[in-house]
Image (tube, helix red, strand yellow):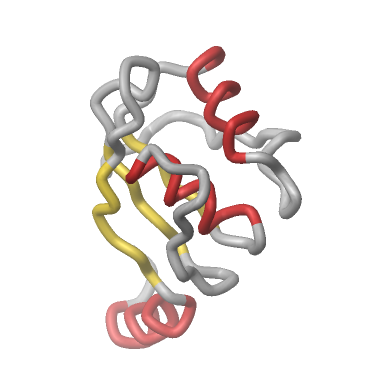
Length: 102
């Protein structure tokens, strides 16, 4: 992940947001090949399920505060994002203690 642009915030990416609405906004406003979400339930696990499996009724078990990194070729043509990694808050804190800020 080599993101050098400004972070983007969305009014549709909220705890009770709908995956379809969020995906539609991403497709309408952005051309992305990677996505990073900081999780908050109940929205995020359903959104990740929809992006990785193209199924709105599939959920991935993600805890609040986890960071999720997805890669994707083109979400407009098909929703086939790949879940590359998850980072738990505890993992981040352990890394930060060991290596400091990088």
